[in-house]
Length: 161
Image (cartoon, rainbow, N blue to C red; front, side):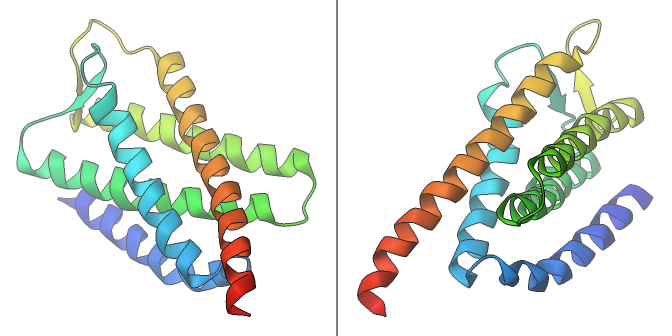
């Protein structure tokens, strides 16, 4: 129960921080990127790779709520901030370090959720390298979508201006 409260409160803080994203993103970009990131984090982690012997969410209500909050709200909002820094003028080294921190948060949270019993593994062990590749794929797809979507919006807004 404490984990649900902590995840919900941290998610609310991240939702409140969305105002800062408007410095680099338009409102429609924040909305669409948030939806795409949420879909990526939830579906790639637990729907697409669910047929393999990987991690899965327990069938109880509290683990489900925690996983929905974590993979549907918390990680996607953190990914929005990673994309925010990708659009900034900071050096590429720092952009990569921020991306690595996000990947570390994702892998660390999977390990933590596995240890406390929210996630379960059907195999004898958990192989984090698979999840590192999946997390890198999520980050890459989110970045490509951000760049393509911004290009499409620039083309469409030419006719509006």
